[in-house]
Length: 527
Image (cartoon, rainbow, N blue to C red; front, top):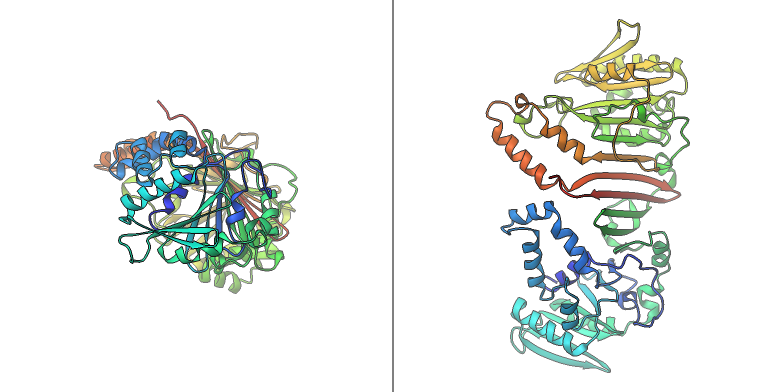
C-alpha cells in the first residue's frame, strides 16, 4: 500500500529492547502474531510502538542522516524526520500524538506480505473512536479518499475510504483482537477473512517462527521472518530466514539466521576450527580492514572456483593444480588486512573492479599470513603456481633476498600482483613488495588496532575512523593536479559520516543454518 505502509515502516525503527516470545494472551492484550497469518510470504514485527520516537531521534541526530537529508533538500536530519512524520499523520516521537491517534504504544505491531502481492499492517488500537478519526484524516489528506463506507460481516465492520461513494476503495481497515488491520484498495476485500482468522491459522501457531525467536537475541527492536518455502527466497540458496535488528546510541546490530537449501556438507567451510595460534600480530598497525578465516581452508576450494571465473579455473586445470589438496596444506586461521596506500591515485576516482584494467594495490596495500601444516610443502606449491601463472597473464619469479629469505614475486600487465614469502611454517603474502618485507621482518607481536573480530569462521572488521584519518592525511600529490576539488568533496563526505566509527561482519554455520552478524558502531562526531 503506497501511502499507509509508511506508518508501520517508521514504527519499525521502534521497539522494546526487552521483548520476548509472544504469549497467547496478556494483561494488555494479545500480541500482533495473533492477527498475522502463518502462510505469509514474510512478516515484520516490532514489539512496541512506544520506542519509535526514541529510535527516530537516534537516527535524526546522526550527521550522516543530516547529510542524506540535505541531499534531498532538507535542512538537517530533524527536518527530514519532521517531514516524514508529517506525511504519516502521526508524530511517533510523541507519546501524546500516539494517544491522540488512538494507538497503544505499549503493544506490538506488524506487517505481512501475502502471495497475492497485498500487504497489510496490524497496528495496536487503544481507542477505536480516536483511531477512526486519525485514519479518516490520513485517508482524506494523503490519499484524497474522503468518502467513508462501512460494511458489516457479522460482528466485524470493514471501513473503507474512496475518493467518492461508489468508486473503488483506496484504503480500508477492520478491528480485531485489539488491532487495526489496514490495507490498500485491492486487499480490502480480504480483510474480513483475516480478521476472522483462528489462532491455529495465525503466526502464533507457527512452531518454526517460535523456534526462530528463541535463537534470536533478547535485546531486539525489530524481527523479520521469511518462513520455510517462502517465494521471497525462491532464487536464494535458503529455505527460510529470520533476522533481528537492534538500535541504540552505541550502534546498530543485525543478526540473520538462514536455513541452507542444499547439502549441509556445502557449509563445511563456515564451521570454525580450533586455532593453533593467532596470526593477527603480524598485520600492520595502519590497517583499516582486518579479516580472518578460521574454517578449514580446503573447504574453500568450491567457493574459490566460483569466484575465480573461467580463465583462472582453466589455468589451474591445465596446470593440474589440485586446489582442494593444496589449500588443505594450510591450517585454519588465515588473516589478511588492507591499509591505505601512501599515494593512492585519488584523481582517477574509484578503481575499476576489473583487475585487468586497474591494479587495486595502488589504492590499498595488502598484507596477510597463513600457517602451513608442514614447512616443506610451501615452496613446492608456490613453484607449481609459478609454472602456469603465464596462462592467466601473470609472471611469478623466485628470488632470494639479501637475508637469504626466498620470495615469489608476482607481476602482471597492471603492475605488482600478490607476492609470497615462506618462512618456516608461515606463508606471508602481500602487495606491494614493501609490505611483504615488513611481514617477513615482523615478530608477530604487533597490534592491528582494528575492531575486534568475531568467533565465526569468517570475520571482517573495518575501522572507519582510521580509514577516514588515513584519507585526510594523504599528501597533496595523491589528489593530482587540480585535485583540490576532489579532496574538498571527499573531506565533506568524511565529515558527514564521522559518527560512523566501525563496522564488523561475521559469518558462520552450524548444521544447516548460516548465521551472519553485522555490527555498526556509532559514536560522537569528531570536533
